[in-house]
Structure formats: C-alpha cells, structure tokens
Image (cartoon, rainbow, N blue to C red; front, side):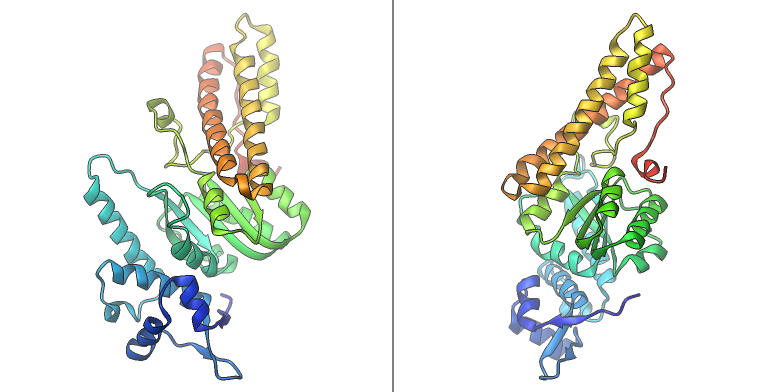
Length: 333
C-alpha cells in the first residue's frame, strides 16, 4: 500500500473537515488522535487519512460518542461505526418503509474525506448512499474483500494510464459493481474512451463539490413506481443490458413478423441510451447545468432499463433470441 503523504497544514485540515483548529489541537494533545509529521520549518503536516479521520470523528462526537473512545480508531473502524449509527437512526425514523442506501466503495482516502465532510449540504437526496469501504489506492483495492458488497465504485487517481485503467476494469468485474465513477487529473485519451465505452462515468478534476454531488446523483435511480421496482437495483440506474448490435438484430428480425413492437421497443432503447450518454457528456462540459443533466441522465437511464425489461417480455412472446451484453463484458471484447 502506498505510504500516506503528509501535506496539509492544520488550517487546511480544519477547512476540509469542518473541525475548528482549537478542537483539532485538543484532540491531538490530550487524546493523541493524530501524530502529524513535521516539515523542515517544524510545521505540523497532516495526511489525507488525518483529514478523513477528523471528519469522521466530528460526525461521531456530534452523535454522542466520546472522543476518548474514538481517538485511537482507524478510519475504517470510524467509518463502520458511523454507518451503524446512520443505519440505526434511519430505521428509527422510518422502520416500515425505510430502504437501505446505496453502498459505495471509495478508492482514495482524500476523496472519501471530501465526501464525508463536504457533500452533505450539496443537494443530494436524503439517504442516497453511504461509504462502506475506504481504500487507500488501487493496489489496496485489488486485494480488499469488500464484505459490504458495495454497489458503486468511486475511484480517484492522479494519473489514468493503461495500467490504472486495467486495474479499474478488473476491480469492477471482480466485485460486480453496478455503477462506477472515475475521477482523474491526467489521463490517456484511449484509456478514458475505453472506460466510457464500458459504461463507467469518467470525469477530469478539478470538480466542485456541487459538480461531484451531481455526478453521484446521476447514477441514482429516480423512479419509485411498482414497475420500476422490477428492474431497480438497490437504488441505482442499471447499466445497459443490450448493445447497439443486439438491438439492431431485434429490429431487423421484427420485419419478418406481423407485430412491429420488437422493432419499436428496440429503437426506443437505442434512442434512450443515446440520450443517456448525451446527458452524461453535457454533465461533463456544463457545470452550471450539472443538476439538470444529472437528472436527465438518471431519468433516461431509468426509462431505458424499463424498456429493456419490456423488450425481454416482447422477445419471449415472439421467440426472438436476446443475448445480453453487459457493459463490463463489452470492454473486454
């Protein structure tokens, strides 16, 4: 695992985590919650892990936990305790109708700290997701068990090169993530294009917290009807089931039938998938319209998934073969 780099002054830790500088000093001196490195000028330097722990400890102390019981816990332990607290609170408020939030694995401690401390007030729906796995980097993620079976993967890398792209592909396939988001600073265009072709949301940093919130929002399911429940996957917009080639075959097959429904449904799916991708591209390019395009992407993806279900029913009725081509598999072909 990559050694954590200490490059944050205490003021930056305070700004990122929302914990006052005076409180951070008390946690450090009285409870040994942090062990910062020292610069050549004798300034305390904190790591991304410290920022994440400060954010988690803040939330837990506000929920009634004592700092003395938290100070020596690692980030993963603190996060597990926080998720237990949130789950208990959610069930207490709505035991009959409460649904589990979308579970997310985050690769990149700094990104996890940013989400924990900054996205709560950025306009995401209440209870959309919770971070159940926090991994330092892709190397650690490659051997992690991910016992919580998270549905979403969020990866933050500095350089998106061929090896990183391959690691992300293997990670998605190994743990069967329903959706994946990759954020990067520098990247090779063929790698970016390949990940996008696989249905992975890829964005270049820097992103504001509002833009990041809308990007996450774009993979969350918008519908709550009984029909949507048949294809809903834990609150997420499912990835595409059928490739353009498969849809074209269905449309051509329907020419030999009296019923035109297979062709019409296949064409609708293709159009919705195209608009879904178009909305994602607009989300990438237009920060001021990010909320609208995140909504449009989620709605079009939800509608596309419903019509995929309808296509399966029509195909079964008309005895039309319908091979599935999941997004993650298509990348390898």
